[in-house]
Amino acid sequence: MAPYTPTQPALSWSIVGRGAIGLLAGARLQLAGYPIKLWLKTPEELLLTFTDIQHQEQRLLMLPQQTDLPIRQLLVPVKAYDVDNAITQILPHLADHAQLVISHNGIIPFQPLLDKLKPEQGLWFLSTSQAAYKATPEHVIHSGAGMSFLAKLTAESNSDADIIAAMTTALGPLSVVADIYPILWQKLAINAAINPLTAIENCQNGQLASPYYQPQIEALVSEVCQVATASGFPMDVASSLAKVYQVITATANNFSSMQQDVQAGRQTEIDAICGYVCQQAAQLQIAAPANQQMLLQIKAITAVI
Picture 1: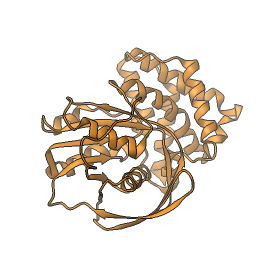
Picture 2: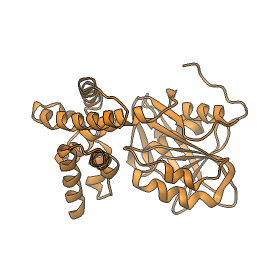
Picture 3: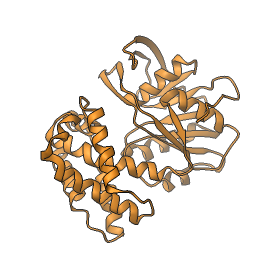
Picture 4: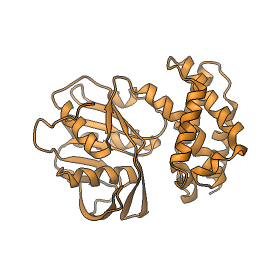
């Protein structure tokens, strides 16, 4: 697609938290000239070491968001279970025409978020396959090149081109789509196949290429495709499986986000991945035993950590 050109000088962006994808986006934005502020539970400066995809290392100073200034552009790259709480806390600090971009794994309902916003405020969803991890709390590494898809969930506005330009810089290459759900279901199939299995097995993604895991992967992906298709988003099992194995190969040396969360004793996004599949399947009266098993196993593991 043709590149977007900002209609005005680089606008300041606020980024919620200090997760790997948020810091990757913040580093790329700051290096491109965008003023960046971090919205943190404990406001503090972050002297970040950023290693880009070419293994070049740079030091960047990121400042905390000032609560007395209205936030006009906000990136919310937090875990699915934290999105609602993060937006609720920031609502009083948003400008009347603020634009919010949320990004997470899995699927959660958008309507409760839309209900919180003023009519003139904008909400976007960004789905990305860019990979990053934190070697230390102050060092983020861009570990895998990917692309992103961006959709606006509210009405068009004059600032849309600037948002698209910024997200192209932050997490591009970027494609703008009218409906994000087909993209989310495709990514859900990948996440449902890779994340819980790597977390349970405590392994890198590449281990799932073993024939041993093929029956489980096929069952998980088949269920996602069946539920997605019944929900109005047709998905082919064979092509979806091919994409899963492409990701397993391309990210063979990576640890999934769920594996990292389980090992660190953190809450996982299983409810927005396998849990969402099970929830939708139940509403459609479709059996999803493979996803149900993954949901229960991850819940059991995290309950005893």
